[in-house]
Length: 217
Image 1 (spheres, one colour):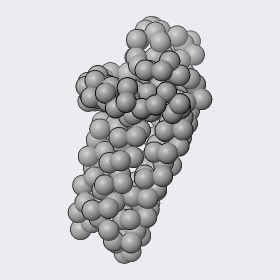
Image 2 (cartoon, rainbow, N blue to C red; image 1 turned 30 degrees about the vertical axis):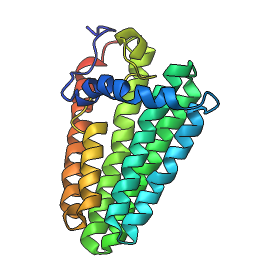
Image 3 (cartoon, one colour; image 1 turned 90 degrees about the horizontal axis):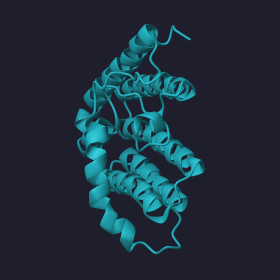
């Protein structure tokens, strides 16, 4: 029988382990920001270097691409730390944060493929984006069902706005793999294929868990 407090097995918990350390590391920066800076404005600002990284990759500037990508990741973590410091956590902020992430995650493979401008790179980027598309439904709809069944983030004491069913490829792995692909363009096709395979495994993990646990009402 389905247990409303049952949640997907934590096959990949790196993000959850790193989140505590990230919050501690970013706390001084969050305290240094003026009170007038709104977390959602920081979220919007984070998208600029993220998209800029894709453009830099597309014109063959790997060092700039990596730098902009890491700035995007820094700002992406800082907006949450600022929201918690100032008590400005909101559903709108959480929604803007995930939307910004998805836009940047879609832009980076396109930028890499444009920089390589070969059939192999475009195919790898297309497959990776296809796995992202399927994975977005695999985790977000499962998350919605868990929230509806009372087994969401609040019930499990998670720091995120909604529960994030874990998978093989999560945020930390994405940062690492995109950094490698941006820094070493000659490896980018292999990295994108490896990442696509990992995301596909994540989809399978969530689908198998759902098949075992969501049948009961």
